[in-house]
Image (cartoon, rainbow, N blue to C red; front, side, top):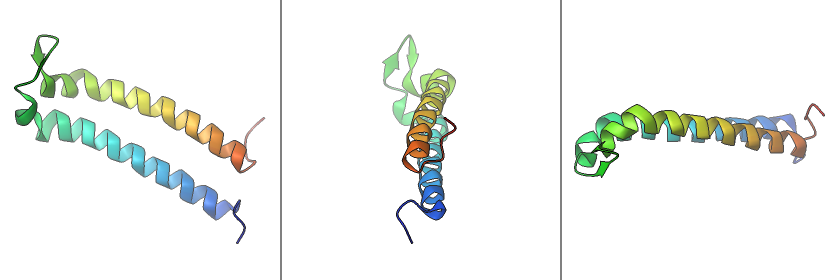
Length: 85
């Protein structure tokens, strides 16, 4: 099997999807809900860090993940010669 096979492309694609979903779950559920009591003592912007992650941090992280995923997939598409340009 060659290094630039469709199977390797999809393995790389699925790997980055699972990594992004893991980061999203950690920030959204972990920091915002499960770990909120541990983060309650840390103040940021007039409120505790757990509340900040639940309200704004998860949204900003999600936007950053979208930007990262777009950049990474464009690079992966060029590497495997499946880009649209």
